Length: 312
Length: 250
Ligand SMILES: Nc1ncnc2c1ncn2[C@@H]1O[C@H](COP(=O)(O)OP(=O)(O)OP(=O)(O)O)[C@@H](O)[C@H]1O
Ligand SMILES: [Mg+2]
Image 1 (cartoon, rainbow over the protein chains, first blue to last red):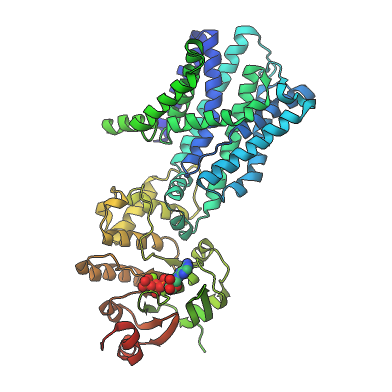
Image 2 (image 1 turned 60 degrees about the horizontal axis):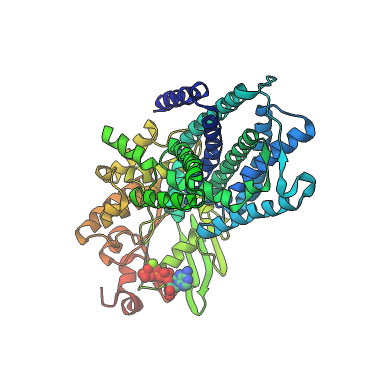
């Protein structure tokens, strides 16, 4: 089982990394952004397994992006590994601060409270003119352990970086989902009373899922900021969070690759429909999601499940 | 006075105008099998809920091995060894029978639930299936909960509650929702498992044949009070019990 997972991860890594050679610049950028957002969505999927959906994951996406930008601009740090680590650390701490509070809430209350926190960040950043206000800030291109590529090599390096992080994060989350704690998360969604009466803390289970989501959100935000070269408060705006939820619902909670595939689908649909019917692309997206929900209530991931089931 | 493994003293509980527990005092010795009888709404489940931390009494004391457990959360009380089953089986409907058992196993494993160890690990599955076999429900291992009969659900509920180090087991109506011809086989299975583990048992039951057959002492509840506390024959022949609980001479 575990060795299958490692092999799949390596295959995915090699296949995706090949994109650095094959893909045109625009597609490489699109994939990099999609995978960065996919990381954020993976965190939401982790919470969905426990029965809650965060409508404010933009909080950590934005927090990660701003942390990287402020550190880069104020301390002259440009190393992508260090920036990612610091953003993840900040989001970890903020996640640990809010997690125990949010883990008391379920359903719409959890969704709205997480949304409220993200909108507080959005509002505050918009008012802070010393860090750019609504215009946001620029961030210089990252370096990779001292290597400072430019042009196509920079794009390719960034792309391979996000591919690697996505594969590692995806593999770790798969291991977690399949673990004893992962099973407890599913049990919690199903019957909290039973879980408590077996002697486990439901609150603790929910807090961990929230904190993992925070860290993934921060990493995704950092990479998105570096890919765009710019951050602004929109990173925390509710429409951004809404997109993450869209992807998570499209993917469902059964399959990790489905999360990244869904993120890529969203980016593709968005850029193409923006091109061909700029005013109605949200409508196209809405109809697409509706179709998926009706045809596959457990998301695209259930296709994988079905396929595996047929094989067995 | 000898102290029991469970000591309940002068416990009171009201829900608004309803008094669900009034001057409840019970001493349960180690290894004993007690049953609780009483009409609907007499306060039996409330007793179970108070001992397991789901409901906090308004006043009184509940001691487990001389330690006051009032105010502790259900999971803390569970961790101390007081386990329970439910009047309506509490299971995870989207999981299979085996996975339900794996949940219980993961929580009570030697190291606590792991972030890395696969929940369907070979050893864990073997343990889960062994427990299911002990309760005679291993054949249903791959089925989802809504497909199960009432008896299988009850057995799984109790099997899960048995995971870990069970010192006291409170069974809330283990045979309710179970077909009549399954009641005795189920009680035989459950009581054998509990006795061989040396567990102290308190079970709620409406069927007097089961009460007399399996319990050594009966507590009769009426209107939140205990109106009799004695051996089954004594309690069932008590005139007050006949009038308020069993409804007819035993
Ligand atoms: N959480 C609660 N809130 C309000 N009232 C409650 C609550 N729990 C129990 N009661 C009331 O307390 C009384 C005792 O209820 P309890 O559930 O203990 O009865 P019981 O003996 O288990 O009955 P049954 O045989 O129907 O299960 C009832 O009048 C019930 O309505
Ligand atoms: Mg009851």
